[in-house]
Image 1: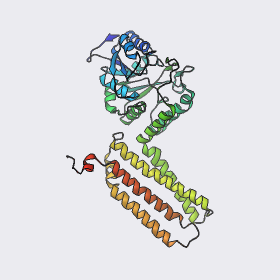
Image 2: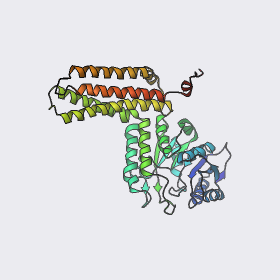
Image 3: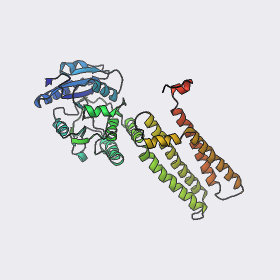
Length: 383
């Protein structure tokens, strides 16, 4: 490997590390030999996230540049390493020897074709290979395929292995992403952000090996990180994940309500309760999608467009409260009007009243989310 200064550094190989003394030295030497075989000017960075074993000493002895990252988390370690990287191209991969750093040619070939983000694919559906014992069956057959499918369906991202930690990105593309997450969801955020800002994404097949930790549990927590992934998908796509299905449920519920009131279906009490629940569940999804979308814009995960800005200027706290109170007033009037009715006349006012309460408190919560420190302290913000 040719040691490079910042001006002529072509490749940075970045390895997040937390107590990987059994494997980090081997990974660094493989990466160094690969760069030398390709005659690339580059560097190897080990972003240490607070190791208490000999990881740092072994990495430095093998020729890596050590970057110590105090903030805890997989994403924090990578962000710290990216901040120190000097290469025009950056390859990131775990230091547990599950990825073969001596076989990175496909990433370089993709760069030469102009791709901004190149993801490794371990799964056979994308041409990859998972060696026996290298991936838990729940990750291989359920979690990873499911979330990769959702990424293709809802975001149009052409990938089959969204969790693969061996990936590469050019410096300019990385600068466009403004990544913020510090945990395992950093890998998901990188892919979703890249699709959001139209960075070219390509997948290349790789082989996943059993890690060299010697039986030590992996850092990934299956159920916790799976839930975080789903939550992140919803944050980046509230209209697709909540608003559209919520509208379908809401509309179907009102169709059933209308059929009951028109006598087209039997006026069964249990069916009426189930139908009311269906309408309110759909309504809650609609309201929730708007709140999540507003939060995502406020926190910088989604862009603010002129049309959305106009919508949120109209859809204010006062409008939400007024509409919620109006729905409750109508519900109260209908209740008094049909007080003596022993049929299903109670169904509509019940739905309107409950929906009004939902909207009222959702608007209140939304206004609290948007409360700035300046507003809270009673001072005005500078223009």
